[in-house]
Image (tube, rainbow, N blue to C red; front, side, top):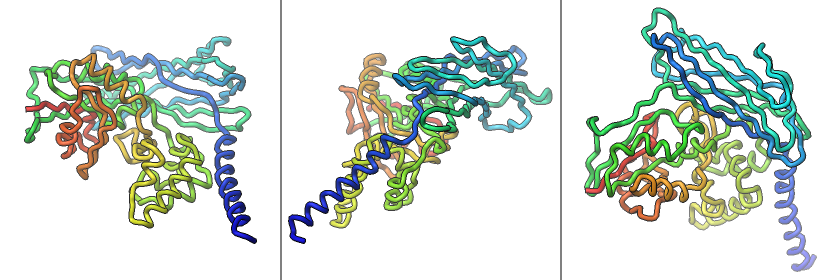
Length: 392
């Protein structure tokens, strides 16, 4: 076999090796249905002995042809707080509010077909009541977990979704003793919030927690992970089916990497495609043999660095894989215009690494990196996604 023939065979094998995972990715069973929470509100009686929570779940089918059945849907509320919540009782009632069927009052989910380009609603009522011996309900948040089955041409898929509903919110005011941390060029203040989620709007969060205390010249930063969570960019691992490519390639990453698990790497593959991940992996391994590190992440794109695997963020999102946020530059510029100060999205860790993911046009990125090097927001369960930087 001459050299030219060998090169042709090698090229053919390479093309086949790339085409197979790309084809499998495109043909992988997948449901088009989208689920989100809408208009959740908490009503508390004067005695604080119970809380009534009402909200809606919207299910939308964006597919142009496919019809998808939902044979099962269950809502499982989970209380979150600092105290003992074992004595708190939750009664859950779900009422299907389909546009083409009468609603049911017996808390039973009858199998339903969501037709192409159509949507349906589910009304959820929760009653939270405490033991008469307890002074008050100490729960701070409630995690609304939805376990539902999608059934159609793709087969039968069991999915797990969820979103947070805060039971208590407190906002900072100018009258408080704000505990700024003094640095050489500036001072910083970590702002504690409720646990953020897709029911929250980033611009409203900036206004609620910072507008009363900001001054001209300040810089307001938000972590990339809480911003992604507000955008609903998180996935439970049970919703991910790792392909053979993810199962093999994930073993080459450092154990602490979010891409060192099959589900974590499959999340990246689903975002950017198997061809890009495979070529980035080949390029990364080749350059690493020459002593050059970090090539995979540069070739695979920003999402490769921003994905957080399970345990990578605050509960209840510690059980999910959180993607990097989207539209970050647009959010920064809109927030800067509304607040009158610079705004940045950042990725910070306890090792002193600070990456400015995006910033408004008037932001001093160098100041942001210096101010956040000590990671004032923390990497544990501090619930301080916002940091206010005030130059001296």
